[in-house]
Length: 138
Image (tube, rainbow, N blue to C red):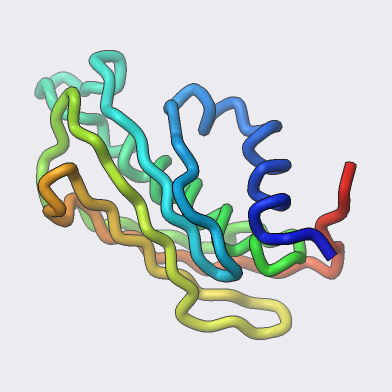
């Protein structure tokens, strides 16, 4: 069986969107992921703050990495996010994904996104469907 880090490394190598975001993988364990990124000018909306999709995408990547770190292919079936504070250009965002519940077919995760001041900027939760197919070296 592959290690959680090897699984996430394989995922990230094929994830051009997470690469475009500039995501750095900081810590991976079974059922856990911590990743970060810096908000760039091309990620801002018409109000001059980060588009909500940027925060969502960072949290979603952490969610994917944490849920797949268990060794089986896991795909999102439901997610939601609450944006709690505006995000600005130059902010460094960190997403921490933690496993709340793991069953044979479903997994539930909570993701907290903070800025460089450790202020919570978003709260994300998601559910994955766990396929039978295990991750394998390619």
